[in-house]
Image: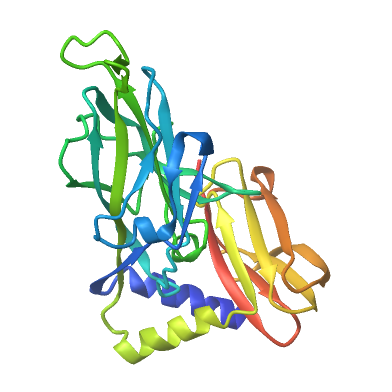
Length: 310
């Protein structure tokens, strides 16, 4: 086991000292969810995954500050395990109708949290008024950095490949050009429309990996015995390793340091296919550094990496 982990750690280290090839993958949403359903008339993936003049749109926004909150999830990315996420680029075609203005309240990339999805990364909102004609706008953030709250973040392939990865957008009606009423002559001030939305994930892999090697990595990722992700990652206080078993089995989750030395057994129990399991790793257990966790059922094993920061 120790030899296996050391080989994997050496491979991870080698990655950072070799030239990399830069690749990208672009997807459209497979799921749409609303935080305030009563404010929307039409919303579903088919309205935002094609540029076909068929829109997701809000009900009339009659009052100042009334919002339309929408999230786009389940993009179906298949970024190779071991790749480094370089940039996330969101493009959306949008416009408004009505005499009053519409602008972003918030725009976030989102990832899986304990029971649902939640914001992760930087606040991406654009304070320019939405145009009256369909116009494409771009939001982007790096694969790692400091988030809106001043905490470090780092996207990983597992997070991006997860069905809860996506983008949330909230827009509100505002006063413009000295208008003081939310409804003009009995008509609503504004309606917000959204058309084609895409996310492009730019990532890098070692240049020594051939296309066939990447295909093998992707094939392995889609046939993993456990669907696993650690969040947040990197972390400062605690992180949660969440995994879903694809079959009933006795499962062992173990944690190792960068030297391949076992730190502790995090989980040892029978699991059931399709059920989610959450394992919390506390700050007190780990000093700053890189750690490897393994999930195994006695016959098959897969690994992941977590990073503890100060």
